[in-house]
Length: 156
Length: 160
Image 1: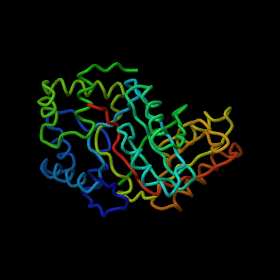
Image 2: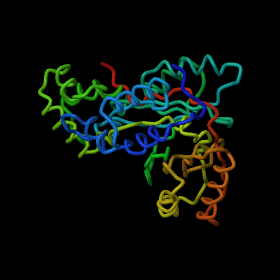
Image 3: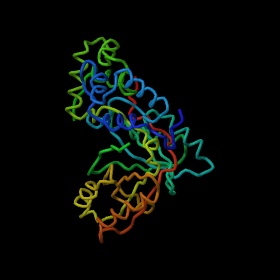
Image 4: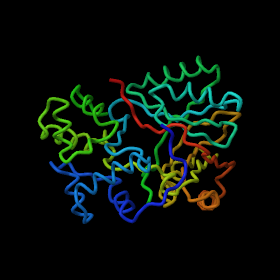
């Protein structure tokens, strides 16, 4: 599935849903109905909007966001300097690994930046070794030495 | 570190693609996993408490929200000062992530990474200036790497 790369015109309702639901989704028996009530809409309307926003990739996901480190795994940012002529092919090789959770193209000599997420610390080294073997390009790991702040909430 | 058991793991595998979009999602998950809904809810509450689940809800595509310029601002600052500087930069409203990461000399002299998001590149560059002001004389070198394309964004995927 291609990721949406451009802004969309969001209705006020969709904005309200996104702003209200970037965390704190309840663990009640009927959570959608409960959230819908606070937004002043019906459960069916909320489910309909969520499905539509997932289909159109306004939302990439609806559900839990995991911190794999808390269960013994690792997240590691890594970068590669990929020759432009090989960019598409290397991108396909890198993205094929399930360990690659996100991947961004950036304007720099290091033009490919991806996050590896693995269940065990050793899984990172294995994934890096595999990418290096398949692409014959060096992978530069940037593990976080210290986390000062993380709060990825953006106002819609 | 939290120890998760095989049922927690099965619950993570069942929800990593998203929660069921049905009236009673925890019942639906329970049916899939052979658990009562109450156990699904209790386990998810525990995973939230222990931080295995950071939060639960909508994960917006920031491009779709109009945040089409995302800049990874990177800074070479003195290792002796980086913790205080990182904490200060992390508190800035425009910064969504702030980390200390290793340098890779000679190609990469930067040890402080701060992500900022804007509606255009000018907004991101203005935010980078604010960070530069906050860092002051501690900055030895700096750069901003704009993302020009999302190549993949699936999040965690445990296999099986």
